[in-house]
Image 1 (tube, one colour):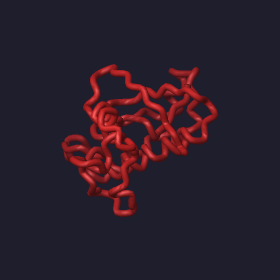
Image 2 (image 1 turned 90 degrees about the vertical axis):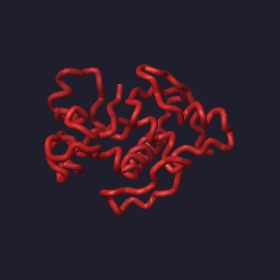
Image 3 (image 1 turned 60 degrees about the vertical axis):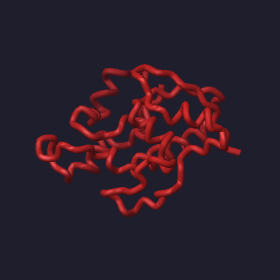
Image 4 (image 1 turned 60 degrees about the horizontal axis):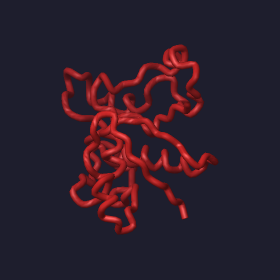
Length: 154
């Protein structure tokens, strides 16, 4: 098991903030946390300027789709470097919805918080014209739902 910051849930509310890695390691000794370089939550820290949950009740990262897209791209870069032929990814539905919908018709393409991200109109996933597969992957995810896909870097 490998923990990755790039495939975690979108960070919107206090319940989405992860605990320090030093604490979580003790609970999950079978997980490799070496890819999580910050002990404290770097994604939550990025949005702390918005205030506490009581002061700011809106979405944080979900209203910053370019930041979610950058995390998804980081994940695919990591995936491309792996030697395994089959990998199971466990994450949350909101993250997957962003990953499979970013920059496709009907998806928000602007960022309120980070002007440095330049990938505004570049989809993360290219469906290569396969409308049926695109419809399946862009649909909202059910709780505990499993979907399969092949990633081709050619």
